[in-house]
Length: 379
Image (cartoon, one colour):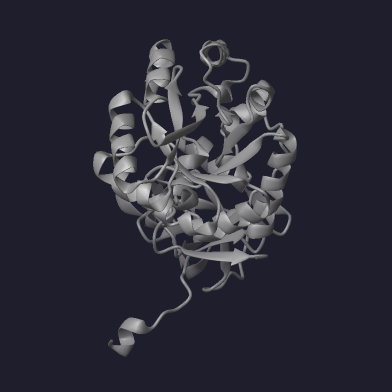
């Protein structure tokens, strides 16, 4: 290999993740929902934070299983001696390797269940499965009104251990919402109907992070499990009640790449969306939308430099963002810049970004760019 190809240097943009805070958050969630077990949802590379290190922290804090979106995500975790389940659905070509690896599979319909059963028989294995019931999400699962007959029929298929059943909430962040309560009623009625037919389950779960905070009844009998993703990282949906006292676990940092004084009348950035009204000390930070900074910060957001809030000037570009430095007349190239997190007594929470963009924290976490270096503390 060419020596130039093997060289590396600290990234200009760093996503710092505090693993001790992750362990603390998971422990707080566990105690809040006890005696329910906790499935740590680690989809999309643990929401972009780096799945192996996050998974280790969650397991060490007492999470009893992992939830992922698809087979490749499951295979990255299957060696960690903790159950791994795919939460949505599997594709036909994924069934054989999933059965071989021992992944817990979702069952959405009889046809897929039959396919899984035949493959399990072929491999001479028993596959652990969980039924996904659509109580109102409208995305995946057996429709709740058809679920009893379907589940009873599927439960008779060979080489399937259908030990779990679950559903999902689309609007649990809205608090005591009538739609969510109706979903709960449908699911409990289904459980009662199946119980009468002699079908019971080892694991029953509906609660996501929003429901854990807003609907404590989803952490009580007949439920004995919860699924949590966003709360692991100390974040909440914008409208959800913060019933858990969790700590944000990450900071997004970069550096000042340039410091210049520009004259009154100078235009800043693509589209010339900002024009200086006076001579201004201007800084260019080494991060842009390729690193996760949303375009919504343009002319509206702030960063922290030397503990001072510095407003974004002009449009955020792919690799750079321009800020005003009038409050830091001695700012220098190379100074640390905090885009998300705290510096001194001042903080910029991720919720500021989600409010500016009109989105939720999930999207922003998953948008952190591939060139952003993930750095872990307090292992």
